[in-house]
Length: 275
Image 1: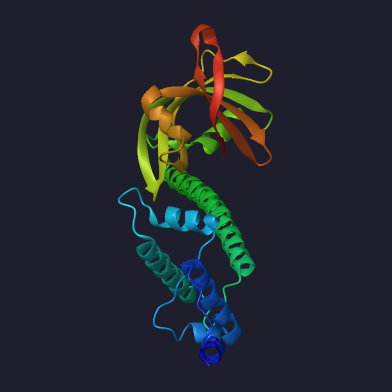
Image 2: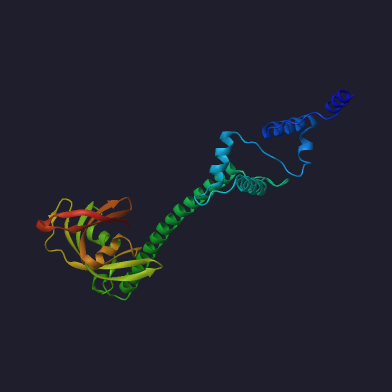
C-alpha cells in the first residue's frame, strides 16, 4: 500500500533538477513553450550572454574608471540605446515637409555667382565709359576755352592753362606723324571725379618718326587723364615723371608710360591709355 502511494506521489509532482543551471534551462524552456509575452510578465528577468556579448558589454560600460557590475553595465547599455533612438527620432523628416533639393540649391548658387560676375564686368565697363566721357568733357572744355581766347584775340599758346594731352599731340604732331616720344615731368595731380584724378605734366617732344631726336622742342603744360587715382598712374606721384610713347590709334592716340633708365634707355611700360 505504501509503495502504491509513493508511485502516485511521483506521478503527481515531477522531481525538479538539483543543479541550478539545469533549473534555469528548464525555466527558459518553459518560457519558450509559453511564448515571449509570458517572459515579460515575470517580476525578474534573467539574461544569459555569450562570451562575445559579455566582452562587448564590458567594453561598452568600462570608461577607464571602476568597472560596473553586469547589471549596472546592462542598465547603461539600455540608457544608451534609448538616447540613440531619441536622436534618430529628432532627425526623422517631418511628414508633409519637403526635403531641400541640394542640386537645385547648387544651381541657384551657380546662377547667383554668374550674375555677380556679370555685374562686376558690367561695372568695369561703366567705369571705363565714364573715364572716356570725362576725358571728352575735359577736351571739350579746353576747346571752348581756346575758342573763347581766340575770339578775344589771345593766341592759344600764350595762355597758362594746361591743354589735354590729346589736343597737344594733335597740334604737335600734325597729320603726317605716326608717333611721338615725349618727356613728361610731373607737376601735380587734380581730382577729376569720384575715384578719378588728372595728372599735370610739363611735356617736351624728344623725337618722332622720320626725324629722330628733337632737341630744340619747346615744353608745354599738358593734362593726362582722368584715370583711377589708385591705379598705375599713381606711380607718377613718387617717380616725378616718365617718358610717353605716343602712337596714333585710329582717331586717337595710344599712350604708353615708361620709366627712363640710365644710358637713355626706356623701361617696360607700366601703364597704357587710349586717348
